[in-house]
Amino acid sequence: MATTTGDRILTLDTVRGVAVMGILLLNVIAFAMPSAAYMNPRAYGGSEGLNLAVWLGNFILFDGKMRGLFSFLFGASTLLVIDLASAKGQSAAQVHYARMVWLLVFGLLHCWLIWWGDILNHYALVGMIAFFFRNSRVKTLITVAVILLVVHLVIASFIPLTVLMARAAPGGPGMAEAREALERGFGTPPAAWIAEQVAIYRGGWWGIALERFKEARYLPLAALFQMGFETLAYMLFGMAALKSGMLTGSWERRRYVKWAAIGFGIGIPAYALLAAYILASGFELLAVTTGTWFATIPVRPLMIIAWASLIILLMRPGGALTARTAAAGRMAFTNYLVTSLICTTLFYGYGFGWYGELSRAEVYLVVLAIWTLMLLWSKPWLERFAYGPLEWLWRSLARGKVQTMAGGALARSVANATQ
Image (cartoon, rainbow, N blue to C red; front, top):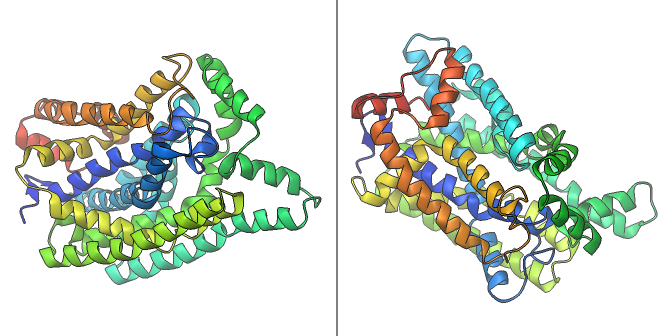
């Protein structure tokens, strides 16, 4: 299986391209509707017919898997940058932490000024920890990652346990406030709150920014506690997948088939059972918090590995679609942030003001349009320039020196290998 182009790892770029497109399948709901709709279709956007089918398909096949895949790829890419710096005789720590500090800056600006759902600041903080595992063996990386997932499972259990406590002692200290917060995150919030959110996000930039900063000013720290163990686990899995040869395409084809079959064979039935449980409850709060937040943790890594294996099996080196998907992956940083600019312009009041206007199914017309743009523009850009525009800016800032944008095919290949 041919998996390299110059110094690029084609499998890595292609899987990253699918991941950066795939995360929009879930993120678009957070762009287009009140936040509770992300977890619970009854909160907003429609929960019957085609809208319910869209939620069901996303939950079983994509929810958490694309984010996890992106985290796998971040861990693998981080290890590549560290190894390349060491091979050049540079300080791996200096190169790595300069990149993470500037990624944190980009992420915080994105979170506070553009969209509250930013993942970059989280990756920067967790990536600073992942550095300490750069020399670990594959077995050690996998063992530590599993332990981290167990810790994350314990932390995640606090959410459904809080629902049970609020139900058992509704008058207890802080229980009313906790229940209200959980309804806004996982349940069906009061109509007045929904109407308030819609009015805010259909307004001007300043009003949206004030609301965003009020809600998200401490979000990076909260996310580090709520999701940091899981994210670090996925990054370590990604490092292990790179070192084992999985993400370089070095495995035998039957090994990829085996892991795709195991991951989907276990994961899809497990997610389907959880979906049936949630549906049977009528999207009741305990069922949603248990089924979407807690019980998925043990099976999600298998689904992520299955998706990576399937993508590698389906990719065709030299094929037009593979080339365009890989180009989108090489420019994942730019494509991720440009997606936020496009979606906030379409949905927020200072743009087209579509916030709350489209159903859950209808927003996927926007997703298809953005996917098309990614595939159309990434390859021509990289045929002319060495980096995506924001990759160039990130690299220039991290290195403290303006990088050359133009370059031939070989120069582009070498330059992009460090991103």
